[in-house]
Image (tube, rainbow, N blue to C red; front, top):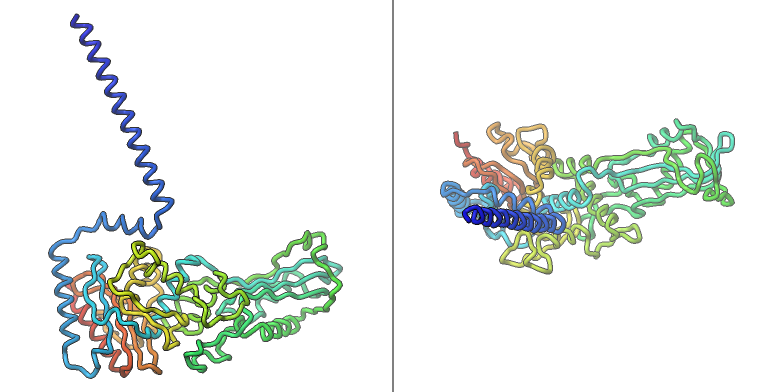
Length: 458
């Protein structure tokens, strides 16, 4: 009898073990489905945000640092000074504690001057990718007859602001044996108009002679290309009867074949755009984003269209479904994106908006490292750029990384970026001035930053 009881208990225990295993398997499957769903439908930023929140531990001492920093900043705003503080906006966010530390007119819409380039740069890098390249190429389709290609020579060109001479491209082609052409030349250009400053800006901001070659208009580009061919001993005889689509052989089969190519990394445009505040590169990039996203159907600038950069930031900062906003703000901010450089006085951002844009960049580790290690101006270093001699003391080296902004026609000045505080915390900040003497505004900006950095704790 005892043996039967033991067998019965053994079977029950085995059954329970099997049941537990089945439950564990079902739980694992459900957990896997949830993770798969999150992987597919959650954005990379949301995943990184969740991971950070799970790791972040805020201590009372860390909170106390924010309180002390806020008091420091507020004391500065109430010290008698030459500037009218009603014309200043300040926003400071602590990355270490992930909390807003200080606001002063931070939701007031103002002209951000060249800090507008931050919006352009982040939108471009997040949309096109850190490894994106501009390309200009020569392609051929046709049939070789002795030393002449009978067919079509095709120039395909992105609106690359660094491309300034067709000679290297033509020499590449010649080195591959292409010297004489009979047939047709086609130019397929990303942009067919001339790069100009926004109508609300000044015509001298981007004069015609400063426009990059591929943004001087199709007529000028065509003349320059034909002249370069001739100068390098390449002959061309137009023949409309040639149909290269029917060509066979090495350079036929109905497709074009590359014979020369030049490309530039997007970072080669954005790095000097931020460090040295290049307006030409910024506006060129701004409209390149429009073209890549189908907002330049006629390959010409459209002043009044909703530019891609604005669409990009609206989706992040102020989506129609406010519950999906990554950085919800209690005040609806009135923003305007008229150009990518900040030359237009009709641009409108807030100090909080610029901080949120830099927060968005900071959460992307690759983009954060690029901004801090390469692309933002930093004092007392080879890339002081538009900072010139500002905050040039050695104690500030490798502790502050910024974008400067100046809009003389509106008395505008701005400074936005990342800095390491005296308390060891990392802060994101933005300061905007309007209708203020630029020199006095810069003194105020530097004073605020120096106050935040102070003497580092031992």
